[in-house]
Amino acid sequence: MSEDVLKKSFYDKQTLNVAKKLLGRFLVRKVGKKIIRAKIVETEAYVGADDLACHASKGRTRRTETMYGEAGRAYVYMVYGMYHCLNIVTEQKNFPAAVLIRAVEIDNVPHKETNGPGKLCRFLQIDRKLNGWDVTKGEKLWLEKPAQNIPSKCITAGRRIGIDYAKHCKDYLWRFSIHSK
DNA sequence: TAAGTGATACGC
DNA sequence: CGTATCACTTAC
Image (tube, rainbow, N blue to C red):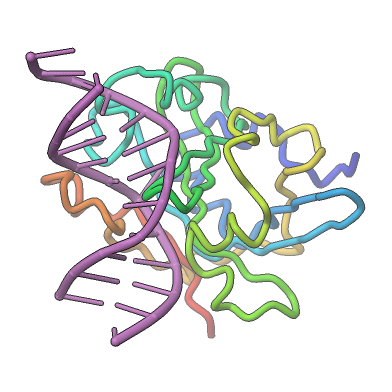
């Protein structure tokens, strides 16, 4: 496996920092012999049982069990019956936190097809079978270092999307994206 | 702006 | 069991 594969030590840190550092890195998906490399351009952090927007705020259940596990695993779930969302589990074991991958860019693919969490999973053929997958192994699904880091002045923080039910937590600036130019 | 879609969680 | 809700997308 490539030396560029991000290790567990990248993920078991503070979630907000991991979310920012994931920007500009490559999400790599291998299906059969085909490899797709996607640059991450937008992420969101979901941190702990106290974050009302985090699925784990409702307690530890079968669904959220992955988030309580080790850092560097994929947390994949289905929403609205049609779409999957890909998250990467962060922080230490038994602390529920993850980074949602909201948008990516792929060479020769219209941005329209990969600029949403449900759309990028459909394009990369990610579904619940990958829930709990270890993304530090460099097989099937993993993340790689970028050619260069994204300067912090090119990162925009904003409110998270689609979590109006989360009361005061909806105003946290826990969505991060790269602004071009 | 609304509705499709089914897993999930919870109440009975 | 039933039913409400949802970290979304697409078509009006």
